[in-house]
Image 1 (cartoon, rainbow, N blue to C red):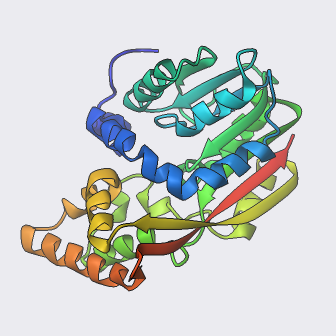
Image 2 (cartoon, rainbow, N blue to C red):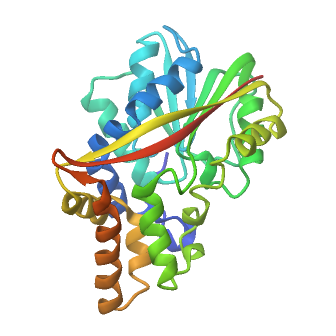
Amino acid sequence: MTNKSPDASQTGSIFASVEVAEQWRRGAAQRDEVTGPASEMMLDLANLGAGSRVLDVAAGTGDQTLMAARRVGPMGYVLATDNSTSMLNVAAEAARNAGFTNVGTRLMDAENIDLEPDSFDAVICRMGLMLFSNPVKALIGMHRVVKPTGKIVALVWSTEQKNPCRGVPLAIVRHFGCNLSAVPGLRLMFALGESAILEDTFREGGFHDVAVLAVTTRWRFPSTAEVIRAMQDSFPGLQRMMDQLDVSERDMAWTQIERQLSQFEGPNGFEAPGEVLIGVGTK
């Protein structure tokens, strides 16, 4: 893997930069609180066991990579792939710091998986499949590299309406005229959010025994103001949208986001609902 970080303007991805990778690192604990239980369910559905070889597609900074590595043990192996060297560098460092010797990283486009056929027991993909321009092509690649009867499991956001902590800010920046297409992937955040769409996508990828599970999540913060601070620190796509606005519009947008989300604040702090979908298929 090259040590040179790809330029964001060349990759078209906000995740290419070192700065965003650091933001993502800082947001790990909050992501784990929101999607941790669903991620564990994803690994359950992948049938991971001691000695399993696992491919983690669009691994990012590797939160779920380490979860999988813990499950497969020292005789197993997890390969984390992503199209951002910066993200993978964070993942590799996290694996070293955790003492894992069964984790590898490789720079790779999810829609062009260049690995040996039938070489993994399972493939996982957390919060990445819906962002790909061609998710079916990505699934076809996953299908090729997993062993016969192996599982492919993907975790995606459900609908915008069921995820106000993501849906509300995106709706507001759209209202202010921001072009979500300027951030590749952002407009696709909820593209696979309907169960039928996710199921059809898996079937087009060549899988059978396809199932989709809806999992409820919770966003908890001490206050709505803390939610806004977290978004400003670890929601890089939203920050890129805000950069399209002038200072006064940006202030108004943040005020509207805070006002709309404040409906979820009560005596015990902020608590908003959310939902993710887990798609699973068998080769």
